[in-house]
Image 1 (tube, rainbow, N blue to C red):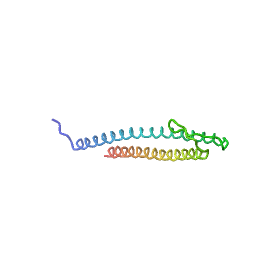
Image 2: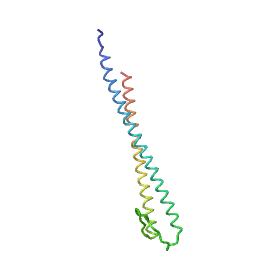
Image 3: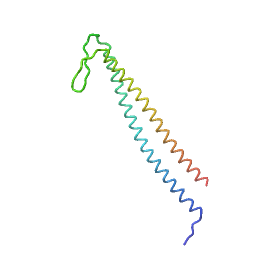
Image 4: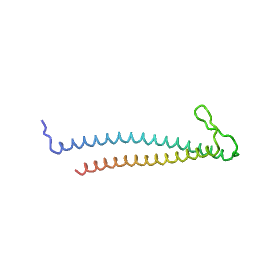
Length: 131
């Protein structure tokens, strides 16, 4: 029967620690990648909403002031003034722009947290090699 040295005894917990850290990083990276993709899709959708509102506002500006305009609400249409519809479209653009900024900040935070986790694992590997 072979006796284990203290060096071999110390290597096993470090290997388990590294395996655990790698698995946690992998789970975190997959989760973060999904969140980033979701944020990208939301940004893309909000950009379309913003463009649509901008194009509609541009078209409405060219109409005479006395033109009857209707807003679609569910299955019906409500008569609205040109100013009300223009204000609603501007509010929609502004809201979409704010949400896009929030999502961009969220993406930066997520990417930064993954980078920090990668750096921590690199540090663990370097400290293991130094032993």
